Length: 224
Image (cartoon, rainbow, N blue to C red; front, side, top):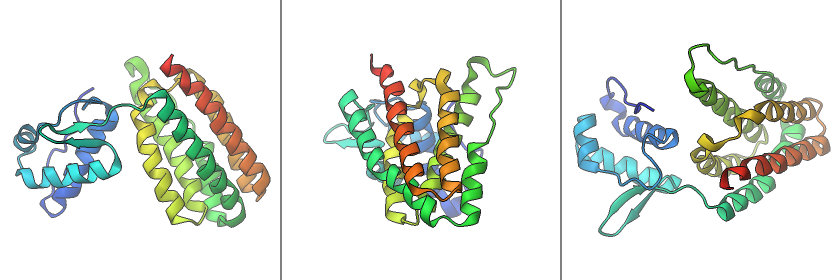
């Protein structure tokens, strides 16, 4: 996959631009898990000094996307092990089931409509999309947005922030997502959205629990 590079970095937001570029490369696997980050090469490529590169890497380290090791420097974080992946879903079950319940109780009419609209989003594959990579990227964006809308509607910013950090690690595994089961995922999203739209917290929590439990089982096949 081609690396992500803006045609021109805006000097007023240089640090944010570089952070966004490097984050996208990591999540797209242009920078592979385990790769060493060459700060000198990045500075030359992006035509900036090393300072904003190091600042961006410090932010990415906080996100858990890179690691800093003595005498080695920064490397891209490895993919989660099967045990780590399972523990991540255990945390998602705790947080996202609560988020769905609270969204059903607290969401505004606008937030309910946005969740339902996202669940109803149809993503068609383009004829020239060899391998379906653009479709995969669009579906990944849709899935992340759906879950984030629910977290936002929960009315708890700390919960939403915690989920965002968990989802960063999930994104690293997106290449191995069982896209053949995307239709099942969409159906599960519909059930969650319908319960939130109806203001039924018990049904929303149950639908989210079922969705995450089955999603975890589907994605664990990547470790086989």
